[in-house]
Length: 213
Image: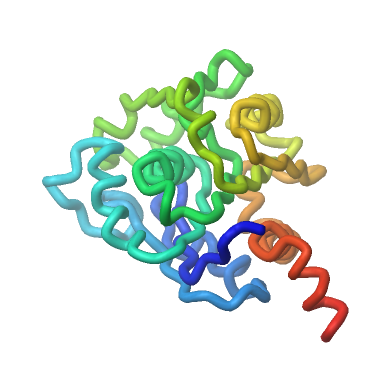
């Protein structure tokens, strides 16, 4: 039986939208402190000249992982979550990775290159982010905590094949594919996603709570 987290940290994708996870978070049964992180220079979070790489985002996150923590991450946030879990495996009790690359080679799975359109829409995004091609494949086997992989079968940016590949590389991973869902499934399917996260965090204890209510 895995340790239960006392804190849930929600990480957005490249939009930096700190409200992306709010609908799902509000539907959760699981009782814990919630923290919604933004990325400096993305969305409404002010830029910070000290942040010049994905590693810098991880460094900013680590002080918040000072107790048993579950990381719940969308898209780009999944790379930060995986890096943080590799550095703080003793504190990360659970991972939830939604429609992410997780740091693997996306073109190999036929993923659509979202960068040109995204940079045209958000021209002020930092260059280091656009140029990042993190590949953490060789280290994913180190992650021994339970991992929930959430994918939509209508997502050209992160196809289901990416989730299937991560499920093979991560020792304790479960893949759940939502029919018809796209890249923003954490938001568009918030209630269903919240139920899956509750089951992931509580395991058999979730069913015990449901029966007692």
